[in-house]
Image 1 (cartoon, rainbow, N blue to C red):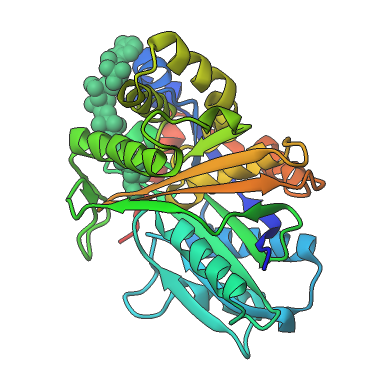
Image 2 (tube, rainbow, N blue to C red):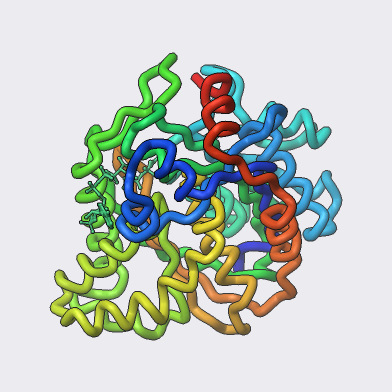
Length: 358
Ligand code: HMG
């Protein structure tokens, strides 16, 4: 059975900070954040915004674009690492806001930034297997990424949500074939009750690159033959320079020279990070923001790869074919980005004091 994305909705929070403001506040050369990490803006939540409101906002947009009946949904799954409760799934908080109840499976999926992709894969495989009995799934990836003040990860913060209805592939058909890789490591984790993650930065970079290589070679072979046929290759984007490092790494493993790696990056990867640069790291939503950006401009038949990474660590490479459907999710994203309020150093400092999540 053909299956994939039927509609997409994205929701950004109402504030943002230019990383150059953060650099000045932290007495760091702004080039370190803009050129060294490739960051531009980080999305930040306003007073009444969190992973629940962002997820519900994205879901409302996806459901409106889908246009189906609520009773034709058989599953709601939320990938997040911004849990609101140790027991109650974030899907219950979001379903409450959407007034969604009845003959539905409803649950939360956790695997750091990989959780949204896992929720999507479960929905896809559920639909393709026939177990859905003709129903569709609502998949939501929603997160708020916050590091401790002055942490090296601070310029890579962000927040946002992507919701997708999974069923008939009217926006993109996702291939059932997929390649995954996992290793149990501590590269980035947040112990129960702690507000901010702990990070082994260099280890996280190594794991991310290794996951990219192992999943890509498993799909395209050791010489990466066939990768060039992709219209675009999207990545989970903790910060844009990470993605560039990963492309360089997989190119080195496959025997590409520097010119080949750089032209592949410029043509197939860099254009997918346009929206990520306005959001920062939105954890589970990050990859799907890149995919949504690419799908909003992709012609019918374009083949797209999507590399998902979640600390801990799990990695997966998905492939899909765009249908060239009208990008109903692009204007709302651009509207959110245009209308949000810019924070300055002093408002960010005040905001930091009162903002945390545990
Ligand atoms: P850092 O202390 O900023 O690292 O931490 P750095 O000192 O190595 O500097 C970074 C780059 O800036 C370097 O470039 C410097 O040379 C450059 P590179 O050598 O790497 O190409 N630089 C400058 N460039 C221009 N002008 C200057 C200047 N100064 C320095 N003046 C680190 C960086 C990534 C470790 C930190 O931001 C961090 O801990 N981030 C969080 C972890 C992370 O994002 N890891 C990525 C992979 S893991 C992942 O993606 C999962 C995640 O999303 C979580 C999840 O799964 O839930 C994070």
